[in-house]
Length: 103
Image 1 (tube, helix red, strand yellow):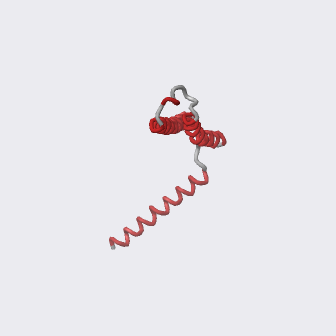
Image 2 (cartoon, helix red, strand yellow; image 1 turned 120 degrees about the horizontal axis):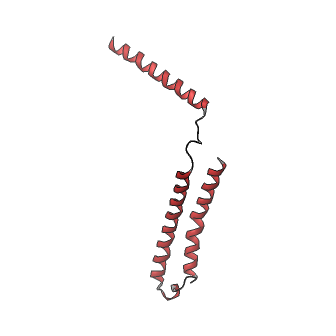
């Protein structure tokens, strides 16, 4: 469980850090050729790349989640027994109510 939280925390931080770094890099002319661009083009390009970077981080997080082994996760036995008892009670209750309607 700790690894899942760690992956989520890293992905969340990257979703904030990467786009802000891209925007700051463009606004401070750290990319070659960005000083020659008009302010309108600079805003459009930096915003577009920031949005794309967030999507890349989300795709990477989904990839890591899908790569995690599924056989490792087993349901809580107490939860399963309570759920089974609840379903049996519901089925029993519905069958008794249908008998009353038929009569």
